[in-house]
Length: 348
Image 1: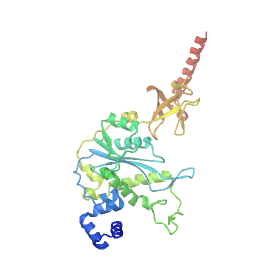
Image 2 (image 1 turned 180 degrees about the horizontal axis):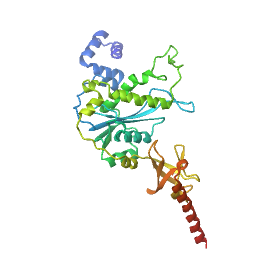
Image 3 (image 1 turned 45 degrees about the vertical axis):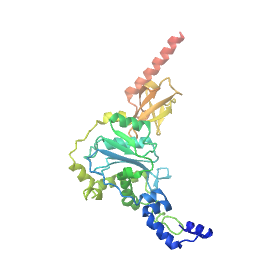
Image 4 (image 1 turned 180 degrees about the vertical axis):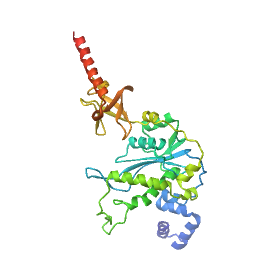
């Protein structure tokens, strides 16, 4: 408005004063339009009203998010990282059926969180089951082939929301804000805490928490969150709303999920076997394939064994070398002996 007024003065055009021109523009544009022209689309959106979503039933729709926490945690080697949290939130009850925390963002974290969300907790946690719908953003971790294939195998209507539209999964976005205010802000290493004149965190001298401690504290926070009254539930807690819903749950056996929710990666077979996340795996079927690139599928953080594929065909199940079953070790030795006999026969 000021620029328009200056140009009119430079052109010698008679017109209203700057104050009058401002009032005229204010009459013609809504506050949202003025905010949008001044600061952009996100500022304009703050002035919009939204429809109230109709109350559904538990497991009707889950919203998922994969976000970097505003917290510095310490790894065993002393390095500092900002953990990544993958979380699934039930849209109807605001419950958090499953989550996973990792050092880096990966499809393995998404699969681990989805597995924990579907499986019912043996300790008595009532949250779980297979959802009808799943909504998430367009992060590459959620769009990975393994995640899409797992959702399709479970019969879940899984699809990403429109880009740059966080309000389409507002329940999980609101849960992220609650986590920052009620959990992260109380821990040392919170990166959004108060700062001094030099821009340093006021409590920066406090030692950061170990990564494992952050995971344990967050598990305790989720339990408190489930029992905390929620404004979006008319004062009821997620636990109360979930237990009051009589909608039957579709429960799956852990054995079925073990084959569906597997992370995938390519590895090269070495003399020692296959290395995955710092552990070595071996089986009889790997004999003769040293130097070959194979696909491994494994259950994140719970993999005592991995599934090995070559050209899409299942090659075998490899066990952790440090926990190799004696029978499997004998089978591997017999396999090697048979390979040697086969070669001797061909040479003769």
